[in-house]
Image 1: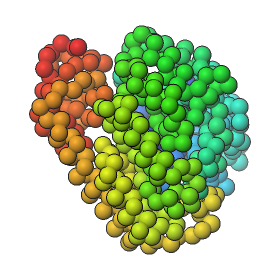
Image 2: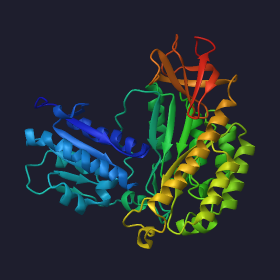
Image 3: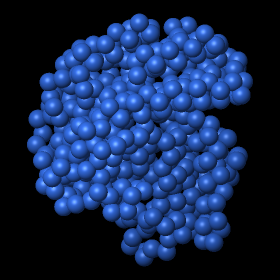
Image 4: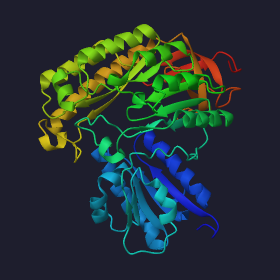
Amino acid sequence: MASPDIRKIYIETYGCQMNLADTELLLGLLKPQGYEPTHDASQADVILLNTCAIREHAEERVLGRLGVLVRHKARNPRVLLGLAGCMAQHHREKLLEQAPFLDFVVGPDAYRTLPALLTQEENDAPFVSVRLDREETYADITPVRGEGVRAWVTAMRGCDRFCTFCIVPYVRGRERSVPLAALLAQVRELAAHGYKEIVYLGQTVNAYHDGTADFADLLRQTAAIEGIERIRFTSPHPADMSERIIEAMATFPKIAPYLHLPLQSASNRVLQRMERGYTIEHYAALVERLRAALPDLALSTDIIVGFPGEDEADFRATYDFMAQVRYDSAFMFKYSPRQGTKAYKWGETVSEEEKGRRLQEIIALQERISREINRRLIGQTVEVLVEGPAKRQPGWLAGKSRQFKTVVFPGGQVQPGDLIQVQVRDATAHTLIGEARSPMPV
């Protein structure tokens, strides 16, 4: 256990980049109160799981993990065990029934309550703080980040879209944007600490507007900050992808030619049931404009199969559209019903077996397309931002190209944060294998 002056906190993070950014925010709130992070749960005074509620599988993993971590509390009753994030917001009553040993449950807009509740006197009842706040942006909190070349920066919180399959507006509240000045100050500080790439986060990040500046303004002003070499953002909504944003991406080389543009389905009938706010014709025209403005653009997407009401013709429309657009990569999922959403009330119309068949079919398609796209880069030279050691090749380094493709190459006289030129020698569907053209950064 930690000394009386310093308390140790162990945090596990589940879900998307926004959850990772929230973990850094939680550490930023707790570090001034004397809490230091630890990677060893057995040494912690506080054990916290920062959770996701997007898919059922993530919730099952969290509940299983709580059953393991509670043993630390059994050995030392003074250890506090808590749950934060989207799952805490979504299932607070159910959680307390399934995990009655929890000491606290805190939603995404209630993180400021953590320092006080962790110092309160013992209480037989768990502390629950899940009130949504339409004003909270945590703009004044400095996150505690780990080492690396990339930093996540939350530009906005919440969502106003209310897609019929999505729980996010119910667990993260309505849209609110961090003031432009606060974001730029944060990025300048990141540059001063050696970060080379920043990634702006938001559920519909391109809907950003602080009352005066929109997302295009944010991109343009960020591009002027010295020390930052690359700017990315995720995830934009197709309906909010303005011409001003496209122009900014085409004008400023620091804005990476990579875009994650969720599709979900290529059937207008399904898109309407999802309440996505665009037609497949609108989406296709947007892709055409993007590629005209950014010829070297890499495009990725999200796809859901087996949404209630999706028939074989709807699925085939999605398959054919993916074959036509040829995404560089895709995140593909079976529909997972989320209690509290509109679609949950409709029930399932596609069997798990059929969902699995459809999913495997588009995965096979995307693997083939990704492999073909990447292999066309063999012999070309790509700019790589070096991140660190490669995971599977001892002595090799790994980094990302401007199109956010993973590149691995034999190690040399380069360091994380260097921008180097790498010639591609081979490629898989997921990785470019190359050789540094020069040991010196570009």
